[in-house]
Amino acid sequence: MAGLHSRRDALSLGLGLAATAALPAGSALARAPKLNSQAPYFYRFGFGEAEVSVVSDGPLPLGDPSESFLGVPKEEIRAMLTRNFLNPTAVTLEQNIPVVNFGDRLVLFDTGMGTSQAFGPTTGRLIKSLGEAGIRPGDIDAICCSHAHIDHVGGIVGADGKPLFPNAEVWLAQSDFDFWTDEAKLGSPLKAFVEHARKNLLPVRDRIKFFRDGQEFIPGVQAIAAPGHTVGHTIFMISSGGKQFCFMGDLTHHQILLLEKPLMEFAYDSDPKQSAQTRVKLLTMLAEKQVPVMSYHFPWPGFGHLAKAGDGFRYFAEPMQMVR
Ligand SMILES: [Zn+2]
Image (cartoon, rainbow, N blue to C red; front, side):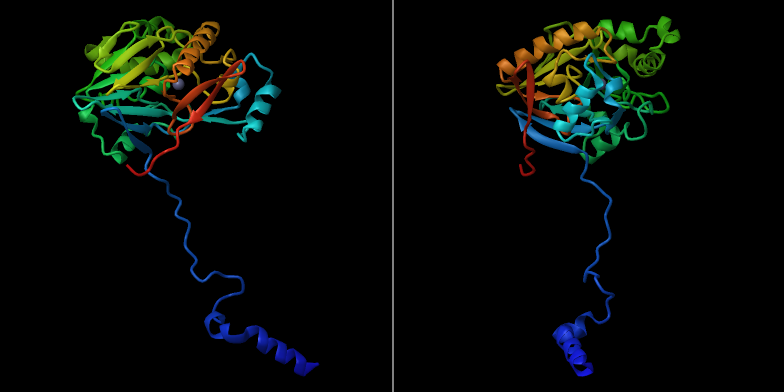
C-alpha cells in the first residue's frame, strides 16, 4: 500500500511540480487587485450638425418607491419593479445633463443638486463630470432649466455662492422663478426647495431670461410648457441639421413606473393630477411622432425612444456607441 501511495503522488504532481510548488493550493498565477474605479461619467454623440455630451450630476437615491410614487398600491409598485429586475424597495434616479454644442454656442440643460446633500453624497458631480468630458464651465453660453427644483437648478452656484458658469445666461419659465424664489414659502414644507432655488437663482438674477411656451428662444432650442410637476415645468425640443430630440426634464421620473402607468402620481409634483395629464399628452405626442428623447432621471445616459404600449408607454434605450 505504501508503494501505491507514493506512485500516485508522483503521478498527480507530474510535470507541473516545478511551476506550482511555491504557490498555496487554489491560488491564481496572476492575482490582480480590484480596481474599484469606473469610466468617466460622460457620453458623447453627434446629432445633426451638433455634438451632444451627456454629463452626470451623479445618481440620486430616492429610497422606498412607495413614498414617492403614489396612487397605486405599494405591492403593485414593488411587483412592477421586480418584474423588470429592479430593486423593489429602493429606487435610484440618474441625473442626465445634455450639453449641446451647436457650433456657435454651447448650451447646458439643467445643473443637478450642486452643494445640496438632501439626497446624500453621490450627487453634486456636474463640474467633475464636465471636466472628465473636457468641457470648461466658462465655455457654457446658456443654461436651460426645465424647472426650479433642487436637483435641476442646484448647480448654478458653488459652495461660495458664486456663479459656476461665468459667461452663461440662464433660461427658465417666469412662473417657476416666481414660485420657487418666493420668500413667503420659506415657512412652508417647501422650505428646503425654496432656499436652494433662492441660493442658486438670485445671484444670477441679472442674467436670467424667461422663455414663453412654444418659443424658439435659442436657435435650435424650443420651449414646450409641461405644467404640473411644477407650475412652469418645461420640456425642450432640440434641433440641428434636420434632426430633433426632446429633453424631457421631469415629464417622467422612471422608465417603468411612470411609463407603464403614466397616470400614477409623484410625491414631488406641485399638481399631481395636472402633471399626469401633461405626461400622457406629451408622451403620446413624442411616441406618435417618434421623436428621440432624453430623460433627466432615466438610466444612464437616458437617450432613447418611446412607443405606446397598452395604456402606457415603453422606453427603448438607444445602444451606446463607443466608437465615433
Ligand atoms: Zn428632477
